[in-house]
Image (cartoon, rainbow, N blue to C red; front, side):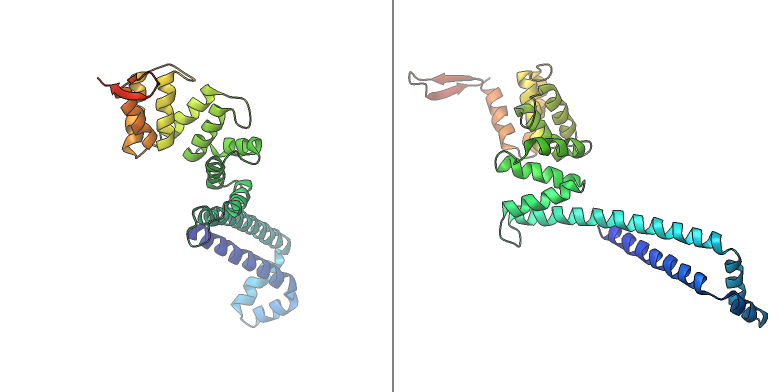
Length: 251
């Protein structure tokens, strides 16, 4: 972020330079510059040459000024949307401030509206931990944009597709998203891929692949994956007449 901020400051400096140059050229007197040039002032000679090309120079300065302004504006938008996301994390986790999920949601929404992928994924994560999003259809649309590259967004959108939240249920689409996130070692996505492969949801049933996914997720600390591995090792449950679990048969 500091590099982006530095570039933005540099662009603002360029914008000021172009604006000052335009003002100086339009305000300079050609007669005064010619007189100074004849007196041996080399800088006046340069200015006289620029004045002679006044229209071309003004056009170039205006173009440079517009490019600098557009670039600085775009970078400023990126900085502020990222800042909203970072401050939202503080409110969501209660780090340095009082924990406030509603304030965190507002900040994540502003970041997401600015096209910040982390803001989108954090908004979805906050919604999933605190219940159904206030607008699941909108959340699904925002996640779809961020899910092109963001593993957390892929995982959260996969959950929405798998559960039919904010639209139609799509197991195949959910599996595809979980697979993309799993390729980036997302623990939750690895565990979901294990479940989908084990049950044959959205694709072929493959218990060996499911076990491999569970093992990768468990290695990353996913508790659900650890339980799933234990279940696969001991698939047969022995229950009493009341239906209470007595023990499991392992192999």
